[in-house]
Image (cartoon, rainbow, N blue to C red; front, side):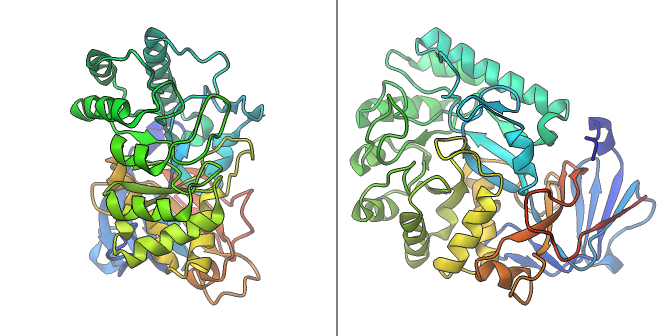
Length: 400
């Protein structure tokens, strides 16, 4: 369908007849509600239809008894410019991920830019340009309107605190993967993480063996000393640390444990199980680490959810929270939870046609992908039946 203009977020949207509402909050993953009211792109009411003001909507969406969840958040991507990646020379990869239910992507560094600058002035210029460019794309509704939070400088030797202050003042709020640049020692990384944190910037560190030429091994001692906000691809990107080291990261660090699709699947499953055993599931977040050598996975987050739920034996409603509310809290995002005041970013799903599962959650526990019937960002319908997932049993209907 055609992409709606940003003006279309204005007005009232009534979402009704929700059969299952996933909150994104793993402490109460399922809401006793069947209706959501949206005004000007924000959630203004969540509850039962009889208790909500459903009158005079600009748009009505009949969910027809299927599932509503927060839009999925990919915690680890490597964009460049526009909806193109030179890593695989592929066009349209971001919009394709929208059809996998992803409404927000977080850059771990624009590292695949051909000739990426590595001097301090160039590092700052690239980060500010990427941040501005992807903000502009989102405002224009390009790439399906997916919220790509970009402009994540890969830190290099010679950077000083004033560089981080300048970046923060320009609107840059992220650091790219520590370890992909010249800063690889734990003490040096810790100093720069501290500067970034002082200026409100969140950081991610590479974990495991090298992923591209120029990167290197980042072991558990460096990760612990650096103390970045996110332990990036704790299951390796692609090559994981020995599981004993991963256990130490789970046990000795309070930071986010990011499991990615383009990593070691065995270590990813074991990490999720260990986090449950340690009673710290709130730290688990999900990403794809795409584009990468193994390509772009438009269904990467959904595949991770099904993989972890089915093989780590974690309820599907909890794992959906790993990809939504957990990431929102660890990353300081407004989206990712179905709560009043939050952005109206939603994915509408049903069990795939002919799945052996009784319902959507059961089908995911059995390892099947759900079918995406619609995706909404800021109250705007950005796609209807997904072209990438297996077909949903039932899809929502739009009325005016």
